[in-house]
Length: 277
Image 1 (cartoon, rainbow, N blue to C red):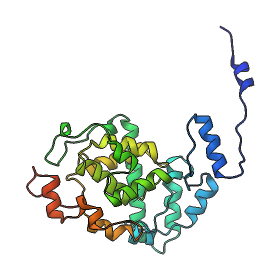
Image 2: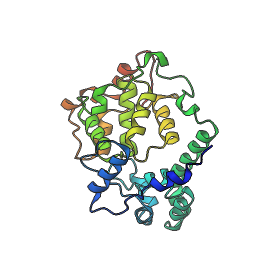
Image 3: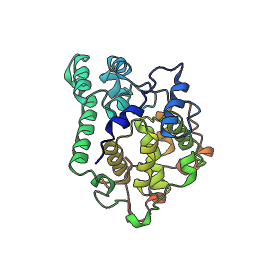
């Protein structure tokens, strides 16, 4: 058998490492992947230096107090953890270094522990994260949910203003705040009755920090196949956490503009009294 290794190495060309701007970098990478370059590259800057700069700025106490707000003190470290630029160990150690007492970093470290737990489940059973851990607790069976993501959701053209704004952020930046991910996921599964797997695949296609374990098991938690009840929300909840840049007028978000009691009746008519999360 002929050894073609030398010939193959000879035709390899080194990758370009320096660019005039991020648009040039995006165009170069898109060319390597044979895809259309984005109009506006994600604002997420890669590399160890960028990761360490963000790590140095974390505030575990403020994170604990404000993490549910879209303008809260979240770390934006997820992409660097996902791609191995930072380890969970060094993030935890930094968190402990910057607090006056370990208790102040407790919630922050709990979130790191969840990520580690999900990774261990994924490592043990890579295919299992795509299968319902348990049955839906929504009054519906899995067969009642559609298999495919509708085009209007993929485009961010659902007609529900706050959901469309969050989807636009996802498509434009490759990132969503965790609370925003919960809103979009719950809308897809419970309002539109789409299987969580369809939404999970879509998120992984668009999230720069898309991690199969954290992503899929979070979707299952929303759906109730990895929790004891479904997660859902109403417009008042969105208005509390998203800030003034998101349209939360009732007229433009009618499917969400109900009390939790009424939403439970609309979304889960086969259940007696599902509780809001």
